[in-house]
Figure 1 (cartoon, rainbow, N blue to C red):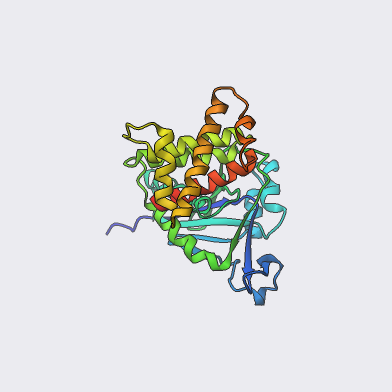
Figure 2: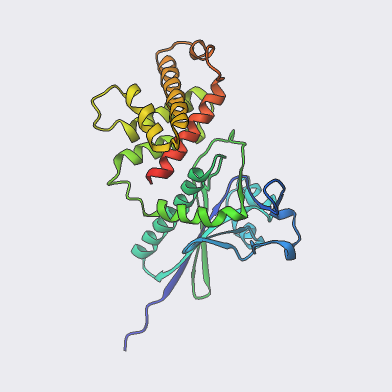
Length: 298
């Protein structure tokens, strides 16, 4: 009688950037959940909160810190600075063979990246999980490894999620996980540019990425000039009233003209001086419009 094949448990732990979970007792007063007594917390972040099946968000543990320590001393501060650091964790138990193991790691990476994408589409704020701690367990044997992608050290902003938003975030994460970007090229280009802008330091570069993303979303197959199509298409998608649609149209018309000044080497502030916008404010509002468009279309 053949012996059963050994099972392998694979866990990926994505170390989140500066991340906060807030609990609001009313709409105006919120508290960082890490500052609450454990008995008063509305959720158990030591065990973790399931965002989607096979993915939860939790506090980092001392075990995480101990496992991470032998790798790169420069990475220790990411998690060792506080056991209240947040992580995304995904675990699967699979057949123990190299092909299945590699495929499972790719799948876990996809789950963690999809959750980060959902967080970015959910609201503004910088968030990533570019460092993933891998733990493979078979019987009593445990092996660890680390994968890390470079990211800008100048991304010092943070991300705040409220406890009452977790369910809605989970619904969005489930959608992003199912997207087949090989079949949706326009959406893939738009998301690539949206994500790329998170690592851009200059507002001019962010605006260029955002307009390229809008072009991918709304200009595919259009014969009309892009500057005429994008503002109207986005306004029709997002505007709930004629006034909102006019505001969105004016915003993206200005954004398109500003982008053109930038790419042609002109001073973009010349075109903005007769508007109500500074460049940073314009870029922020364009980002919000792009985020809302992507959420509608995923």
